[in-house]
Every structure is written in structure tokens, then in C-alpha cells.
Length: 193
Image (tube, rainbow, N blue to C red; front, side, top):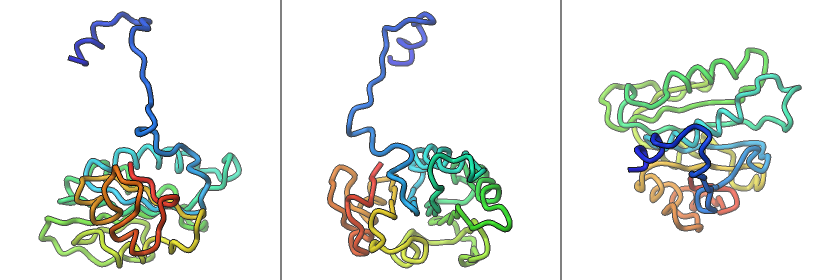
């Protein structure tokens, strides 16, 4: 019904307005200017991460940025590598942004849960990697700074309910539980999209 209503509008019509209600607006660029942003996404939960990455990585020249560029690490869980949404875009960004001779700004770990292929373990020299399994405590500890860094760390989470339950607690609850809660991250550091 909504599609039909929108396509029937005439160009320039102001019969439709879009409203961002507080529960839908989680955080906006520059994301409180942390020094590090960790992203945990599962399946289609990559969508808001792509929007954030576009804002964060879209300006490659550090001198032209309005705010200092944070380091970003994305843990992206998918059932199979072939079905990882936006895989080639993410991998290309990791190559383009991490210019030789500069500090590595963006890393991505594809974590594949339902593929029997044996993927290599994380290669610290690469800006992207593929591994079998699930996003877990050890991977988060290896990929993100500790919660003790306070305001300098933000963690974005988006994915299916099981991901929220395991990683940070239900989306609709402000309290941080799950792996991130065990690691000491607070509601001020974790954004549930």
C-alpha cells in the first residue's frame, strides 16, 4: 500500500513527510568523536554499518576531515561467504582506506557460520580476513580496545535477535549484557541499532 501511495504522488507534492522518531535515531556522524569504533553486524544488520562506514571512510584525505578519523573494526557474521551482503564493497574499502605507509584505519573480519570451508585464521597484516565460526568473546577482545578506554570507544551492534542476545542483550533494552556486558562495556559505549 505504501509503495502504491508514494508512486501515485506528483513530483513536488508535499503530502508525505518523513519523521525520525527518537527510537530510530540512535547516533549520528561524527558519533561523539571516539578514537575507535567497533562494529558487530549479522546478516542484513550490515545496512546501518554501511551508512556509518560511508561517513567515516568517505573522506580519505586526513587534512580535509572536520574531525579526526577513528580506527574502525568490523566483525561481520554471515551464514556463507558468498552471501555476505556488500562483501566486495567492504573488502575494497579495507584496501583503499589502508594506504601503504599510513596507520591502518579499517579492518574487517568476515565470520562465516554455515560454510564447511576451512578459512585461515586472522592475519594481523591483512585489513580483511575470513574465518569460520561465530562472533565470540575472544574475537571481540582481539579486535576491539577494552571498555576501560571509556569515551574513546564506541561499539555499534546490528543483526538478528540471537546476535543481540549473545553480544549485548536485547535491542530494546538499554542495559548491556551478553559478551559486551561481561567485558565491561557500558550503555554509553554500545549503540544497538
